[in-house]
Image 1 (tube, rainbow, N blue to C red):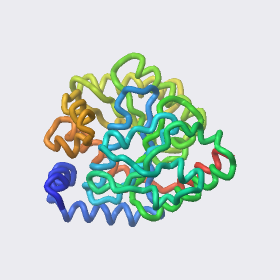
Image 2: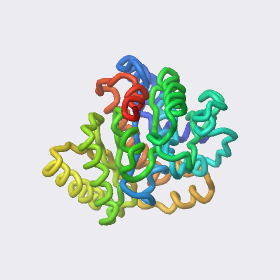
Image 3: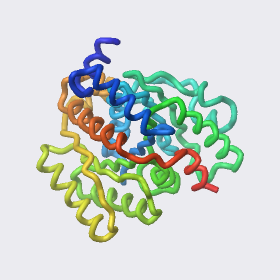
Image 4: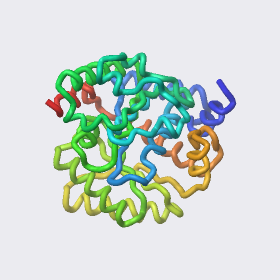
Length: 297
């Protein structure tokens, strides 16, 4: 194990370390028939959604789980930039039938597997039937080769975004304390509820000055969701404002790898711990990609 990987493992894995990580991995695999899917989305762009997705996958991998990150932002796929990966092939090659998913998959930082997204291929619902079915069939192979699949979805309430999120086992909506971000996050949650989303819904409050601001933001959204949507929204944690996040973006290296001792890494590690605990007790819903296929027929 590399020095950087060891640093992340020490930070994210429950003590006393390797034994706990092995136990977690075995618990997850024992309780599932297929990989758990976690969709990361947001009401608007610019709230740090992709950063959360990338670093969460890395922290889950550090716990000993086989984590795969899939960039399914069909309009503005950019997770590869955050990891300084220059993919030769993307999902567009899978859609066209030119490459298999195995050929497109590439090793990512921290031991994750990465499926690069395809900017500009449009909405999933707009793909021709053959291409859509081919993509879904290929993606189904992921469910047997991973413990956790983290989906970096697009922002907003487009059909593809809501489709992927609705089919997932868990959905984490990322927001900031800004009023516009909160409003858009609620709109996303409302859209999911209107589609009878059966996934566990959670909120991550990013770019906060402290825990009090995060708690206040969560309660604002959760209270309105409960009152008007009869929706229970889990408090999935928060991310403190940290200058290392911007530095890591400029350096094209995930902050959990580049700055393992930072506040940002401690926050995303805490989110990963909560997510892994929820996964152990969560009942599987069968094949995620089969559910996705059913949403776009």
